[in-house]
Image 1: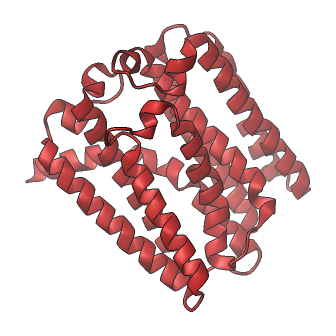
Image 2: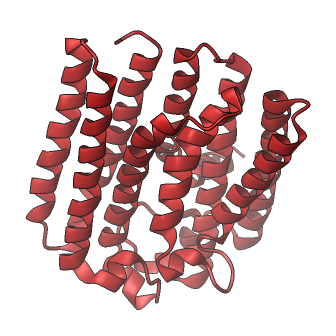
Length: 304
């Protein structure tokens, strides 16, 4: 029993959670800055987002496992691939995770919008889209992750929806000033996905998983990665200037993040073998989370 619990925890890939909740911190802290924060909404938004991420991880484990894509992957072994969780059990796990995600979504939007039927239905629909997207990334006959569309969906959900959408839960209005950190978070998240896909390029090519990295090849994928990270840095600095903060500590933290990202690009430039991209995945994800925490501390008026 304990062995099975451990395998399900590993399949949930909890290390991916900090990246998934980065946008929620920014959108929620911006609501606090404007005097519209709510602890119940914040807690539910975090747990709902985590449920989407866990569902996505289960579905990816299942989808890539049954298609044989994971057979020679470089990263950590997956549950279905290794046989530690059977296909039928993982199917049940996906159904259970999807049910939890839908229940949390309903509870979140009911508390957020109460009598506002239009926004309630809008966000229920958005939640259902998030659940379907989490599953369809690798599951089914035509998974969009196998058509190179994963980057687009990551930018939308990890960036725009996560930041601006979570802020909407508190304010019932679109704060377009948040487009800057939303794009930064989205671009960095796509950068993490691109690193993952560059690492798995050879195996994905053999498995006919046509990610952007497979379509571009190593050399052009690195150029694409440079554009993603440099764009995120430009938008990050533009937002920093618009805040016009006098906090030396806050400005230094953003500066350190920018410096780290530029060093990251220099290191990526020298990589020639796809498997060597693996070591850059976790640091880039943590850098994205670090950025979200820094911005959140500003909005929470701790680093203002």
